[in-house]
Image 1 (spheres, rainbow, N blue to C red):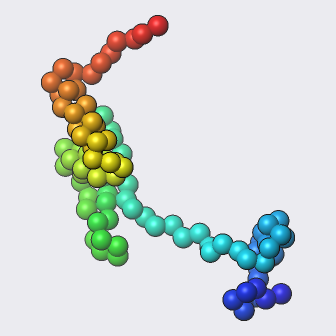
Image 2 (image 1 turned 135 degrees about the horizontal axis):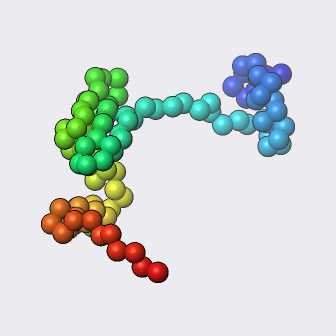
Image 3 (image 1 turned 180 degrees about the horizontal axis):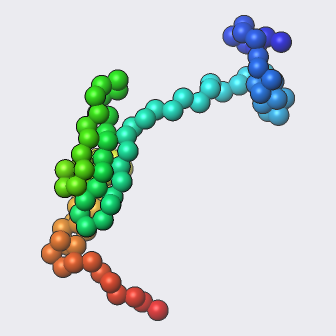
Length: 104
């Protein structure tokens, strides 16, 4: 059986179209690798970030990775207000240390 774009459907596509009661199927999933970030503790991290698609990746570990991790974290915030609050929280943590109180 051919679908709307004129190619032969796979069995999984036939099952999906039957389940949705339609012969229109969403486009196949495509994974876009945006990079890898991992905080390793004690102000160090591992980072591998691809800035421009199909280009070389920026890599860093330790303090450099931590700088990459924080810069990506800040740029991915939704609003300027969130960016400001996150940066303020980081600054407070540097000045006063982590808050270790436990409220019950």
